[in-house]
Length: 404
Image (cartoon, rainbow, N blue to C red):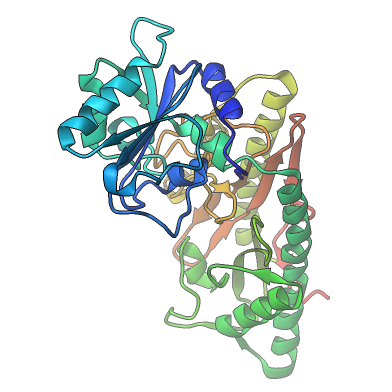
């Protein structure tokens, strides 16, 4: 995640990605990505538009309104103050002129995605894009730039993720044991009771989360975004199937999430119908992980949609393609759904690159009417390009909860 704004690092990234400049625009906090990259106080959104033009080489230009002339004073560059809208448009045109052109058309990055193909990046509306195009520049997506400065982890964040993963992993032992004990002593347990035990485990180990985990029994597990405790029958009994999806991070500044999903069966042995589907999901998960490992081992750049395809192909070939109803994974950061590249070729065509020092989930699933199976792990690419799968050992079978 970003530290203090560094002009040198941003301009290095612009040259790396072959972009002539980056035009960061915000109005009343609508572009949170720009504000984070620039280190602008998120609590002081202001009431007037600003532009910050960063050329690949040379001095940036700050374009600010007269009554908020100090809005970007913490940043380097030449200040241009506007009052009238005509002065604003002229200032944008002048700032763009300062960007040297490396190709036939000057390429200017903005928080924009063609055809809204990647809504996670699309924070600038059509108006500013039209303005820049009217100045003769080509607007390109800042998606890879955003993740370089928003989704890349520090060493300390990698450490905090690993520490959080110890406790998200151990939460499953706590949950399975609790279910087994309640079944043996009371004959049943509710989804909500299991959820609350997991939340207590998080609190005990200094973890926090924006939302409680998903505990889903039988058909509820067939809903990828099931809200625990809202189904028709939320009681877990012998011979029931249970899916648990949980996510948490250390309750510390700049901490990042660990996000895992596993499945269990309330019995001493697991019926074949669950095992068969689980094996397909696990094979898809492992194919995606292997695809990423091979790419980084050979130094081949890859994009999020390619990883999604490698995973999805396994499920489609097994005949369950229509039952895999979401992307393979998402970026992970200070929010559980972060602002880096997602593993997605289904809901969007994620053409951002998978970068070093970023983390994402791999979580294929097959969702049926009476149960659903998802297997989720987190994948982190370190600074050397080594691929780490976090959160303990990969689940290789549905857990027989009463076997212990």
